[in-house]
Image (cartoon, rainbow, N blue to C red; front, side, top):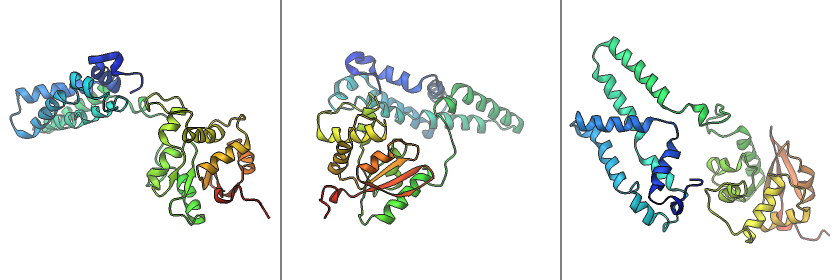
Length: 286
């Protein structure tokens, strides 16, 4: 989690992670109320599963002493927040709300209880617009942009390789492997995030060839920098054995990409697919 370190926070690390993760959402308080209700009222085994799981988590992965001792050694500090997902807050609140509804026998009272619970959930939760920016319905069954599907079709119809190596732009790069795992992505997720200023992916050796080559490609295609020379960009594509480069139509570097030896194959609604024959990129023409 960005800006949260055990070295600075010590035993309060878990508490701060919890506060930042949940923000203004009050579901944890509802969950706590549910656990108290289980202790006071419910003796059957099913609801007590939530109680037992919470106690176990508090003694292990939420234990400040154990977290301080072991998380840094496991180099899991930046990813620790994922442990918070294990706490069954949402399933617990949903289960307890259902129990309250079914506990009411009168239909009118039951309908009233449903309305009251719905209002409570809306008021104490986090609105979607506070979590998701620029929300839009999925374009297809695969929940990826239609452009990505079209680009993948172009690549596979052109390439004889089982696992073509591809450079995608910042929008498609995180989605490409989810849709088509046969593709090998040139730009690594964590290096992309690091170059964009993220503080949650650790650090990289910026002097390594692996980092430098990817940074050159990003400088041209992501940031549209004028400081990279064509021969430098071409060499980066060659060294990374790039087969295809996918560039947004509105990118200003199309002539630059072509000058580096990339051949335009096809254009989708928003992207141009280029082939780069890296195996013959530096062979002398007869």
